[in-house]
Amino acid sequence: MSSVVLKKGREKSLKRRHPWLFSGGIEKVAGKPGAGDTVEVKDASGSVLGKAAYSPKSQIRARMWTFDPQEQVDAAFFRARVERALALREALPARRHTNALRLVHGESDGLPGLIVDRYADVLVAQFLAAGVERWRDPILDALSELTAAEAIFERSDAEVRKLEALPPRVGFARGNRNASRCPIVEYGLNFRVDVEQGQKTGFFLDQRENRQRVRSLAAGREVLDGFSYTGGFSVAALAGGALRVTAIESSASALEVARENLAANPLDATRVEFVQGDVFSQLRTLRDRGAKFSMVVLDPPKFAPTAAQARNAARAYKDINLLAFKLLAPGGLLATFSCSGGVSPELFQSIVAGAALDARAEAKIIERFGAAADHPVALEFPEGEYLKGLLLLKAA
Image 1 (cartoon, rainbow, N blue to C red):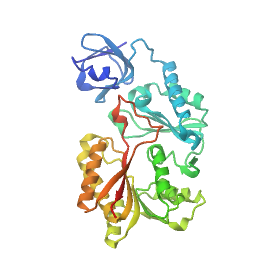
Image 2: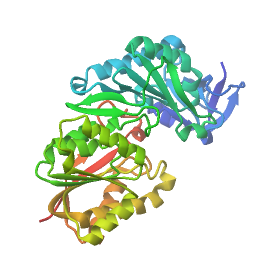
Image 3: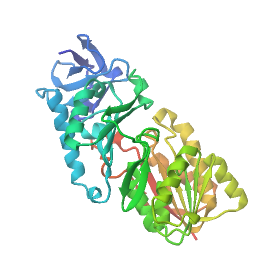
Image 4: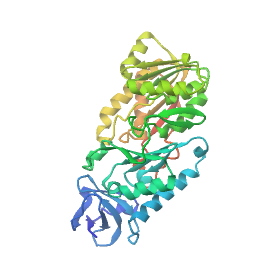
């Protein structure tokens, strides 16, 4: 087996069980490992620290499979990891309220670079790193057998694959069925998920509990849902008794699905206005009209995938939150989110605080949001905590 030898002192993060090895921490590579090959990881003295997947083109040069030098990395290894991930989800309370869950969450489930979401009888898999790409077929076999899913659709088209020098791949990996509108149920609400064309794997499962929280707070409120996508927060707010919902989304196809989601539930469609357009400009238009809302939800796309892009992202986050504060009536609630891994919770709070200051609004944090429990964060892998949110009360 080929091996990578770390520079002196660079083993500290591995001893804390962080799963990433960066290129700058490697002293030498013994042998000629190819993309996705399993390599032994050694410290500067030659002691074996574990086994990892090698990625010659990525700055994350290796991702740890195991910290046990004796553990074999083979098909049985991946089956066991998938079994463990599935068992965790089966034990979650959300399992009783939905047929859509994240089954595998990358590094936090011991499978770096692998994302698997379940939408009823269809799985959507993303292979985002060289290691899981190398073991793609055994992983798909294990998923198919252990979940008895009718089909597995692959959405390995994320930008991060380029960093691993992997080409995009989209299509059915196992089985075949019409998956353009997978019907799912979430806390009694019906949604249609486009796993073939939708963002990420088709639906934002990480926001499940946050949608339910917004639903519990929406009664009697005029709600503005910015970046509404396929209407998850809008439908939840309406189901919670919102007087009216204004949903803004730039994607015509996403709004088409949002209308289908609304129609799939016994809700009063006349209380929802779908607006197609750039959210920034639409918020400014509403501000200029003097519009007011008693609840605003902001769930924008990822503005900063990495910390290097945080500065530009900060401007965008500040802009939309400043506008939200101006549109929020006294005593109103703002549920604001960031899914940017490059923006820490502390930075996000600072940005929102700056927006409130510029808007001359006084607000208090009354709750913090994170991803649903089927998106666990390993203690040794803080990078897994990408979704953060604040529930703010504007002073009367």
